[in-house]
Image (cartoon, rainbow, N blue to C red; front, side, top):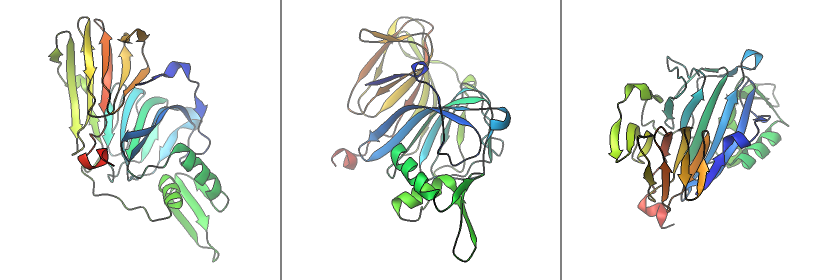
Length: 281
């Protein structure tokens, strides 16, 4: 189990960035969601005013989940989110242009070909010696004076990996936005109700919300990595108690019992279920 009380972490301005706008970040966690599949989780704050975040229409070779803590981010083509909603961004699917102003987002991204934060930043620094990151693109001029532009994030990946990035066929044509207000509560066990907001791909990635109607326990079983965001109230794990804006990870192979009282709400995210082959690597 891994616990991050995000209010105890200061925001840091993102300096090595691929997009315009002033973005602040709280590093939550980095590692593997399952054997051979890397991930990074961050709590991100996007400024308003002159610091508005913009990104051109683009796509990635990794999956993402974004939980909107506050604000109204615009992910392009009518995909406008608001606080309390979640969105699944499938690898290979285009989205944008993005405009995000005064929003706070819990972001998790994962892939078998994941580039860690340290690897990204070191590569970014080297790339700045021969080109520049501008308006969401990496721009460089060759010896003949010809300008070359590439998506900034993807250019870093290609430079680090030493090979051309190829995109998977999108499982879904665009990101999927989940509005919990449109779902009904269903009983999960005595004292806990669930809104099952979505399950995605052959990896069985899921997003759910839970509400305690009486003192009870929620079991996060060991078949995958899962994590919860405490939205309201307090949860207890063993003798420790955690309040709102805490992120609690239950790693693959372990079971975590989350106890809470009436009125507590959490959002839960289920990461890919490991394949039989990956477990035996």
